[in-house]
Length: 137
Figure 1 (cartoon, rainbow, N blue to C red):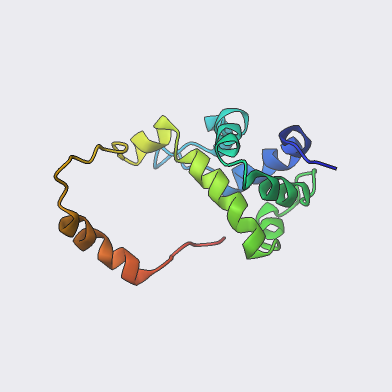
Figure 2 (cartoon, helix red, strand yellow):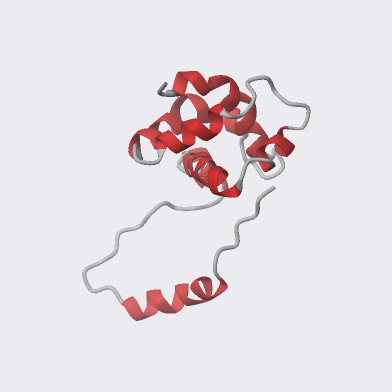
């Protein structure tokens, strides 16, 4: 049986807001306020059809009913499975103009023909040395 987006709507409705609840003080919208489930996430899944089946499978394994402690349920999923889900949800969230505005992120900027790659490498070397720093809640 192939799982599709409509099959996981119930899980997404509680899961996305548990993962991205929003913060009024920081002017950051929640996933549902942003329309993540209806617009942004489907677009992200269409852009990566190679990863979408793993996303669908993982989300479908979660309960349809909102659990008493949604984050506990999410954290019980093995990290390797949840990584794809988290990347899709966070990635879709970060494409919203409301989010980029609140973060004061101007968007991607064009690189010019005579790019100073030494300057770019100097800027990113501390990040490469630091390594991954994702926080799983």
